[in-house]
Amino acid sequence: MKKYLLLIFVFIISSCNDELDPKPNILWIVTEDNSLHYMNLYTKGGAEMPNVSSLASEGIVFNNAFSNAPVCSVARSTIITGVYSPRIGTQYHRRMSLVKLPDDVKPLPVYLKEAGYYTSNNSKEDYNFIKDGEIWDESSGKASYKNRKKGQPFFHVQNFHNTHEGQLHFDKEHLENALKTNNLDSVKTFPYHPDTPTFRYTQSLYHNHHKDVDKEIGKFIKKLEDENLLDNTIIFYYADHGGVLPRSKGYIYESGLNVPLVVRIPEKFKKLSPFKPGTRTSSFVEFVDLVPTVLSLAGIEIPRSVDGKPFLGKKLKKSKLEKQNTTFGYADRFDEKYDLVRSVRVGKYKYIRNYQPFNVDGLYNFYRYKMLAYKEWYKLFQDGKLNEVQSQFFKPRAPEALYNIDEDPHETNNLANDISYNEILLDLRTKLNDHLISINDLSFLPEPHLLENGLNDVVGYSKKNKDLIKRLIEISDLQLYDYNEISSKIKDALKDNNPWVRYWGLIVSSTFGNQALENKDKINFIFENDPVNLVRMRAAEFMLLNNFDISDSKINSLLKKSNFEAETNLMLNSLANIKTTSPNYKLNLNKEVFPENWFPPLRSENALVNRRMNYLTDSE
Image 1 (cartoon, rainbow, N blue to C red):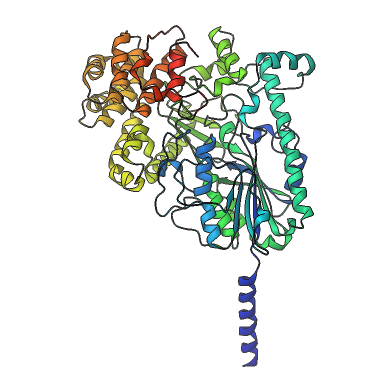
Image 2 (cartoon, rainbow, N blue to C red):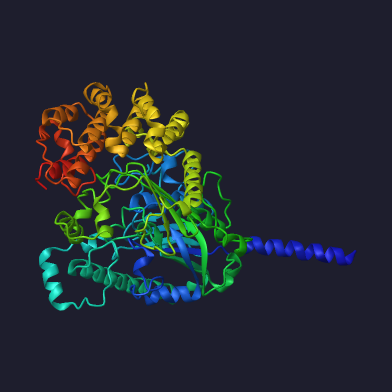
């Protein structure tokens, strides 16, 4: 009997000790706009970052960590909620309006504060949702974990901006001077980039920015060490998304999504990690996993509203985590540039679905094109000085693409039409479709529709449109079949009573190009008479892509009917794509048809119509 009582006593003491275990401090060190392709820790020839490498030597290096979106506000909205952005309406960058989060979705710091953590963020937020109350205890350029109460655990985010895209917005004079003093012979450009002094210098400068940010990271970690905090602090280092040379930030390729992630866990908390220090793991993790992982480390129950899964914490098995090999990506609007692209990667195979494949990757974007490399790339394309791989950036894409990342890390060889990969293609196509339907991807309805109808109750909006969204996904997939097999379904879509079915019927028609010219009379009728502006512009888009003349007066008349800035910006995107692919395309657009408040300074988040109009009227 005494033996059993002793065992019970030991069990109780053990349980109490578990409850009394101190909570770890958790630190996120975040750099902006850098995929793993630019770091020697991951890629031979990349920038040396000794302080990050030192973390890696004591921690875990994740070879397959992914942002779900290749741009800041969408990525950060995903990171802080643990929810796929197209499910809750936070997928557009820059936000025209903020969405109200569903009642069951809370930002990570809220859960941590409730559990006794001091939460501080220095200093970037950039969320696409309305903040309900104070999310952080501190969030500013001066925010620090040092302001916590004695003995209180902290969750701190330290952002470093040295690698941000804006650091590469140098002018021609800077470039000319730099080329006189920099030896660029050792710089190897990516295969899809032209191998020019401009691209070599831009890449070299970007590597230097990595080295600079590493020094700042080293200083910050040294302060932790001096304060005797390293032994109590779990440190994450990651980038907020990929980038930032052309075709990375803002694009759903691996250079836009595949990010560095290193996690150092002190000896006293080693039971919270199934991985050994100083090792690498092939386990796939994505940004929706960060919230549940931090909650798991902090001993907090993970809410059901979170889409991700923890990859660190008690009772997780390495063998199970190593089998995780899937990540999803999404790309929608980037400033004034619209697109709709989704991706899924399973192991070494990456599947990309371009839902508007006639929108070229190189479609003009004011902020992207502040970089000289973008401007030069476009000029070389216009002059016919690029090879096939380098030219693809400015040409229409295939509706779907399949890449073997192990053999083709830069995604230049599309295997979608290779019959030997057909089984893999169909499997990944199905996986992506199942995912989009499971999250009820809101992007299949145009953004202006969400802004007018769903901002305050995105859950109700999602439920109301669930069947319609599934139908729109099915219509969009008509792009993937032989035209003769589905031509009757396109005709049915063009005459449907629902405007968004007609809308997608027109997008599919534009994808097939001259194969769909049998519908030109119906499409012209839609352009002249449809009651919905966005549907009429999609009809105009089909006609312009097929070289039909449309008078400036008719385009101006259509734009004048719009009294909603978001709607106008979406319509102007179609015209901008025509001009990007046909530089001689001229439009006599009238700015006076729009309200003056649509034309703030170009740097403003809401200067989208202004940027597009300047580009289309050659006053950029």
